[in-house]
Image (cartoon, rainbow, N blue to C red; front, side, top):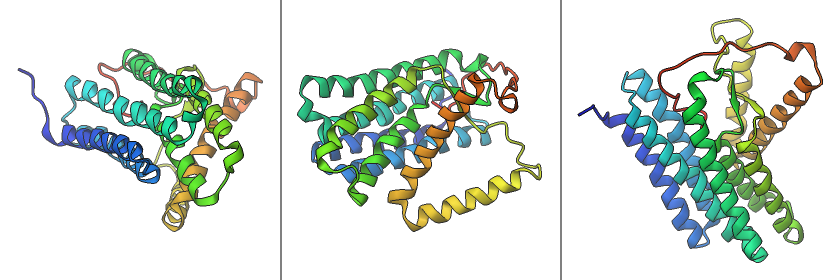
Length: 252
């Protein structure tokens, strides 16, 4: 019997627990709590793969378990949250849109597991499912904090957001992963300053900053792809293809 490593899989279980409790909170109409538990799940999702690699405790079991946890926390949980929060008044269209988000998230995970070993690590193909779930949760928190969009347009905006995120997850649009940054180079010092500034802003007002950061990442990625398609020379570099024996748990 192959080894099942305790610590990284415990962190993955914490990810799944946060997703499950988010669903409970959504059913109770405690939508802000549901959103924060999705955010917490994304933190555990970032940690489990890194802990596994640092401890040299990676395994195929861990990869598959991580995918199942991601589907719960970043597929089903935000799907239920979207439906109960804003899509229910649309009737059949509302729950179909929420299911489309879940289905596209599942397809995104399956595609990642199959093709991650042959894709460049410089970017993700399609929007990662944790990022899509993060966009949903931070958008709801932002709405509760700022009141934008107002009640008259909230349903339509939420429906469009759901369909857009579902489409981006199964698209072939490239989203930068920043995995190939040379953190020892001088150029990366600027990224460190940006990271410190982002941490300060998040600590100051996380309800607004998290939404703005994720929105900026998605918009930047779309503009980056548009520039590539238009033939901007600075963005035409070809990332090196890296073949791996097992999928990288990050970027799902």
